[in-house]
Length: 340
Image 1 (cartoon, rainbow, N blue to C red):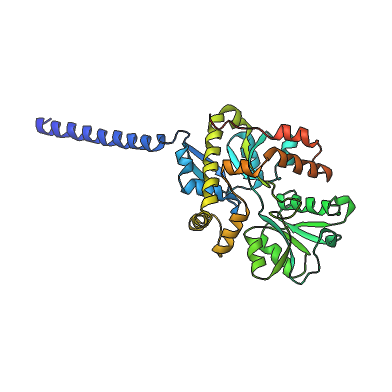
Image 2: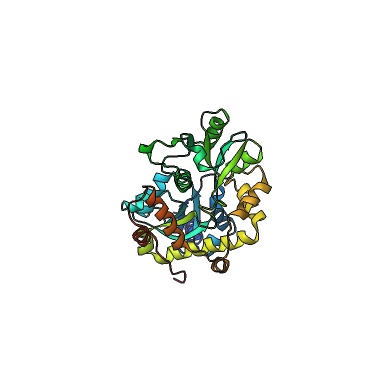
């Protein structure tokens, strides 16, 4: 081989190797900047309930704690299975997983996240105003056993209406799409609809319905956490540091939202995490959810275990849970050391 050609080929190979190595090093540097790597969090459902996750993602709080966070959508069954297997380390939910946990699914609650977010609507011209008015009526929920179903069941039971199917005092009908439930309400096919915000409040504000029960303000729920942070027991016990870091990121977001509700709504709208047509209404709702810093929560007397005991006892009374509340909370709740 010609000496000059040999030198050129050698240099070219070396240069190409350097480029390849540099690219690999660059990729390695990019991915290794996150202590815990990529994590999927199933928190996208179109509701405003997940706003701390949206803010933690967009403001860099997850990144600060070592995560390349991917926010994804998943139905309740997928989230439950993912948490039990450790595929998902953490998500938010309400009473939806209580029965599964009682039946042995290894999921824990580690914190509360907010109050409010579900309303019970009737037609604007409806005479219905209290629980007993709905005796013998049809009520739409997103799914049987879901949080709106259980929340309305609690409210009705406290108000003197049995929600046990065998008593036949009220009929629940599942509508997976809230818009379809509201259409059925307007046409008189059902008598009331339990709807998530922001859809419920937007429908009310438009003058299409009136609210007879609001989880954020009704005495049955007022001031209590209705939405909690669930974690995989598998991840919590095998890697408590990871769960602690996720919680710190969420707490940073909660504190930031408390000080910047308007900007939090902007972040949600711009990221298309929730469909927001009325910003002022969305800001009003976010404020009503009472996000707060850890210090503010202490001053307000927030009590996660107390709220879990309260709701599990109510659910036990109406037959959704079989264990007494003390035993259930013992099995359900686990405190996380945030300094790990």
